[in-house]
Length: 195
Image (cartoon, rainbow, N blue to C red; front, side):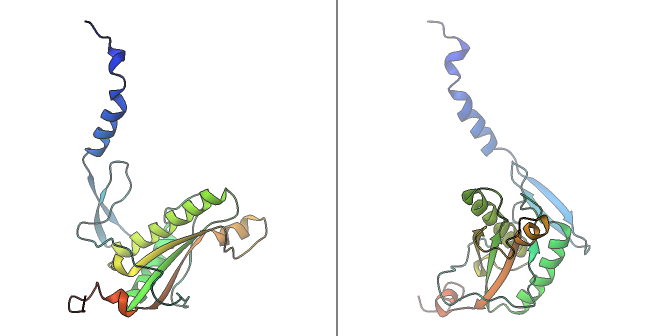
């Protein structure tokens, strides 16, 4: 029996998925404006991955008290419909990281926000991507992933409710909040803590 090439077309999606999964990861060296060079890996789709050995487990935001804003931790803004960090945002996050490293007894919550344009579902997803991008940048700067949690509020906690570009720009943000570490949140971090 002779088969035509079309009878095997069902294999194409599986082969493509396998090729992407097995694609080699590239190592990228980046120099930030402060002059320090970091080496990171990128995934097959080109997004930046965390350096090897960086703990990526996320903190539990439901355990303990409320997270508070402090003046030392500045909010960053995002361009419209984007979650990548611009140079100004990276500079602000580096300053925030200095404070966070000096206060390693704190738990951190990064909250992602959006302007009112777009659906609720889309804005929640975009807010989460913004929060995750900030969290991963903090981790690249040496803050343990176990002390950083993320949340997205989408468009729900707007700072401004006018339908203007200036107002929308204020709402496209990520905020860094902190709280004291609770006893149960430190159990997994301290090898001598009772289990």
